[in-house]
Length: 456
Ligand code: SAM
Ligand code: SF4
Image (cartoon, rainbow, N blue to C red; front, side, top):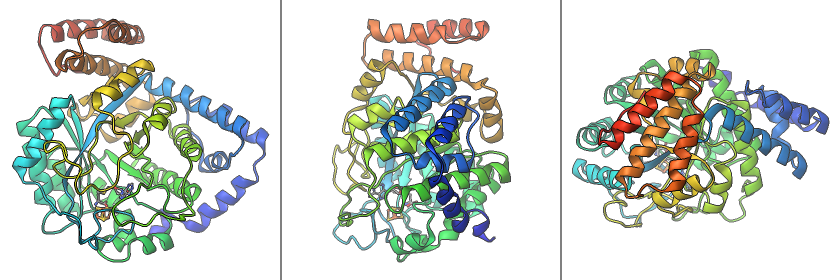
């Protein structure tokens, strides 16, 4: 397949160029329009990406917050990554795991060690994880990944496993589906072909088209919860954000379902990865703009924020449109049960524990959610999007957030304090459907009596 049909650089550059000429009045009009939560066109997103002026940026942030609250309420889903291996045959210039990093201590965890890692995360309070590994056909092949999934599901209280791993064949994606994957996540890193070539000099990953078409192959294998993103800081962020949105639009047109999530990984220092004088470094202000533009353009797509960002910036972004955040993360295999930081992929920035992050979320009035219901109730892909757009999912999500948060409070030693109780009380009031509200209250009583894993 000619991938220019998906990512046409000339067209993206043309739209960006036209976006530059859009006046302030039109930009304000676009921001106003976005508040209806119906999404924006690629052209409108291009205009918003050009905003530099502080007052317009404030308008943009306000709109993003409004749309986030309308679509997701106060909920923020919490998860942690689990790195099973840092062995990799690729040579991504920016990554600590690259094959040329001979000095890095290489490790692929055994199934028992992977279960230990998952247990350590469950002991912290996690229920959803993102399994991550390098690409090594011998060490991190499909058997390694599916065996990991099965072992974690069978031996721990982890209820949803998303995967971020190298692109694979339709056959292997089918095995991943069979093993119970939640979302398959893959970042194109940069959609700009020339830069892609430069930063992926050797290894299987140098094939831009094979990576781009991974989404098509996973869809063909029946995985319809898909996550995309660009590694921000490799190339001009305006181009990469617009290309990510173009990719999302292609998915919507081709499969009738857009990406379940968009991630916003920003380049971090990594072992032997040169970062000096990077002309594409992104400021915090630009980063906030990117999150806001994604939120307004695709109101129903989850936005995932990792601990690559500082605690201070994350606390601002919780309010700006992100809907999923990782917390208490380690990016080295074995990091949780060995409590080490040796051989990590990149340096994390927000080093706070899950408990500390939960504390901040509650302080800011957010409702932490450990919900894993949708994929277990087969609400994925098109079925999920239909419900989401009709806003019906809102009621389920709200109830599930309340139930999983209550469980978390009871099981992880928070005690029952007034602030969290108030948060739950207020969250209950936000459920408009009386029947669902009553059922949620009943389920809460059951949880207090010791029942677990109740969901809608
Ligand atoms: N190895 C697989 C791959 O590359 O697709 C999957 C896992 S890789 C460990 C996950 C993601 O980490 C990559 O897609 C990349 O975007 C991100 N990453 C790599 N180096 C990074 C760095 N220095 N800073 C921030 N993110 C980085
Ligand atoms: Fe390997 Fe992925 Fe790191 Fe590239 S980004 S070196 S493929 S782990």
